[in-house]
Image 1 (tube, rainbow, N blue to C red):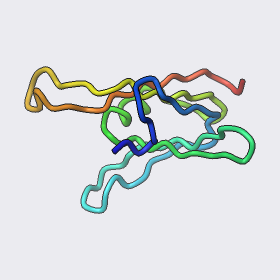
Image 2 (tube, rainbow, N blue to C red; image 1 turned 90 degrees about the horizontal axis):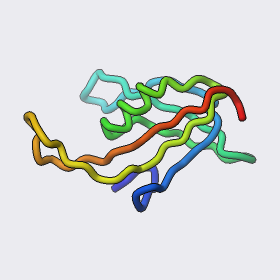
Image 3 (cartoon, one colour; image 1 turned 60 degrees about the vertical axis):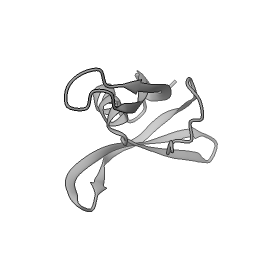
Length: 102
């Protein structure tokens, strides 16, 4: 189940960053998860929350600021190749930031 509604590789959502912050990731974990509120045109708004962990990492690395254009693309499924979670499948995302309002 893909919460952003991406159905296939290459699907994306983009918009101008209105707000960034953190939300409680779940009631049993004190960790925080980043979010970005985007204006996608007209009256449309969308909140991208950094779950699963690959999206969280991509949002943190992007460090988008209010006024930036953000593009979140579903890259597809990947498989962990080493370590404790070797062989486990994960959803992979790419996040692109274009600085300043365009």
